[in-house]
Length: 90
Image (cartoon, rainbow, N blue to C red; front, side, top):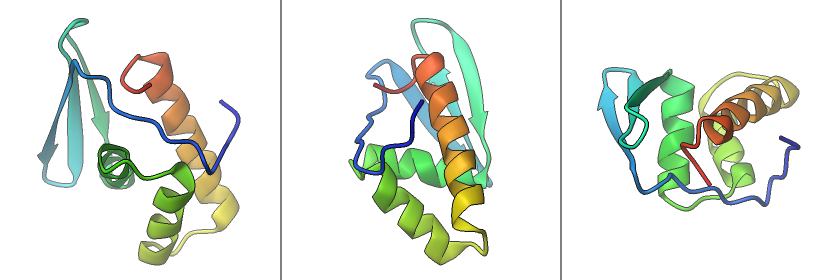
């Protein structure tokens, strides 16, 4: 995936999410597969559910965590790519 801060992705209708401690567990009902997100991934997911752009989500995470912009962007790009690949978001 090429990083686009203006992109708005949305969870697939057939995916259920549940926050457990610092993680979010995703269940794709059609595939029967699970996917776990760490604390930062969980906040990414919440931002997607709220309809935020990737740039808005990244800005919120930069305010919250001590991390370099480039490092966070690369991490978000990787996770978003995995979510797309697993048909968890559109």
